[in-house]
Structures are given as structure tokens and as C-alpha cells.
Length: 324
Ligand code: DGY
Image (cartoon, rainbow, N blue to C red):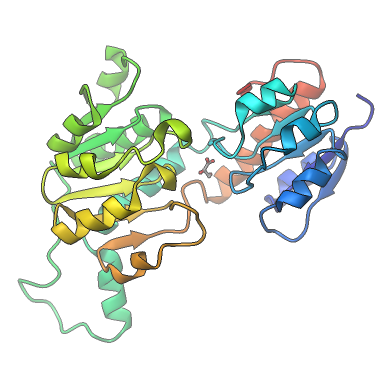
């Protein structure tokens, strides 16, 4: 390929924009909004490389239209459920993502959501800001004890393991988890002697807190549904920093109403950034705006990782994070 025409769909941290500018003939799309379907269809015939993010929704018609023109979707973000990997492969479009570099920050955020939901920090802050705090008293804003409780993890990949380490080594939590792969003993030991259980329902039944770390997409759509909430230990707290579509939101509200679920700490939502208006009615849901990887170091590292992948691809090498 001579000088590749590259489209960066969203605003990235400046140092990574400066670096990608050196890689080819780059269009930095402005405004900083998700690409429309029409824009994707136009880009399909114009660019050799598209660098989308997890918030870009790529239409099904894009892939055949881009065949022979777009060579790679070098995505910024670890999740790639916004990309139809099979369609990309069928149309000779490579796909890369940016794992590893956001593991710690995403697990930090999940732990923060767990603590905030358990100890009612969001509610407390709202009360204080509203000038409604009436002072210390033994029965004021009682939360749920975190230290020593059991944390259930759904999805025991990099971020699930990092969450387990924080919870076990930081807060003395017992770890149980579910994952489709048989996790080797050394990984379980390093993650706080975590115990693998055979099903999500079993994990839910044993857990005081349930944290989701599985990928999004068709395989995990509404994985956490009425059946799982039904199996849950009463008073459980749910944390979701994975993908919104993993949780059946109707079932979530039912579980909160029935008291099965005490609280939830959420970073992601079905159809985000639009939120089901019911979310705003519940004081016991912590609502974060998809902040898992949002730290300066990590967002830079994600950009550099996407560019590393692209440079390898353009050099005819196998990119480190080739998804397909
Ligand atoms: C990802 O990368 O998949 C996160 O959801 C955003 O950082």
C-alpha cells in the first residue's frame, strides 16, 4: 500500500493523534460523536484504514461495501462487539483491538462501583450536597459490609482476574467465578484462591456481590436475566463494567423492586448513552458513564496500542492484537 488513507473516528488523546498523523494520510473526524451509518458507508469506499472506537456502530452493509478498499479496522478499545468479526473476515478486513493496557483501570473502576454501591457513597454525596444531612447517628445510611464477603465473577479473563485480586488481597473477599474455559490452578491461586463453579446461577447463589467481566455480543446478550436474579442470594449487589447488553434491564429493575438485589453499580447500559428513565428513579443504583478505562495513562496506552497494531499490519506483519 502506498500512503494509506486513515480515518480516526473520534477524538483521541493528543499525543496519540500526533503519532498516528505520522503513519499516513489521516482524517481526524470532527465532531467527536459516533459515526452515522451514512458516514460509515461513505468511509467504506474512501479509506484504507478505519480506526473506530467501541461507541461506533458499524452497519451490516458496511462490510461488503468496504471489501477491497478498507484493509483493517484498527479499533481503539478492548471490546469489539461493535464489529461483526465474521463479516469483516468474509470481506478481507482485518480487525485489531487494544487489550491489556486497560485491565487495571477497568478493574479499579469495578471495585469503585462495588464500594460505592455497597457503602451508599453516591446517595450520601447527594444528601450532603442537598444540605439534607442531619449529622452522625447509629442508623444513618447503613450499607453492606464488603470486607470478607463473597464476590462472584462472571468472566474470568484479564479484567475478571484483576478484579478478583483487588477484592481478595485488598478486602479479604472470597472469590467464586464462572467462565466457559477450565481455568488452570495457577491462575486461580494468583487470583486469591478463586473457586470455579459450574454455572452462573451457582455463582449467583453463593455471592454477596456479583461483578460482570465477560465480553458483550450475541453470546452474552441478556446473560444476567430473571433466572440468574432468581438464583441470587437475597441482598446481592450487582456490578457491571462489561457491556450493557449483558444485563436484562427489566429483570434488573424487578430484582431491585423485590429486594433480591440490594443495589447495583453500573458503568454500561443497554443502548447507551440513552438510559432507560427508570434508572434515575433508584437511589440504590450507582450510574457511571462508561468510565472503565478513562484515565490519562490508559487512554494514551490504548491509542498507542491501536497504532502499534496498525503499523505492524502496514509492515506486513501480524499485529499483536489481531482479532480476526
Ligand atoms: C473497551 O475498551 O472495551 C471499554 O469498554 C472502553 O474502554
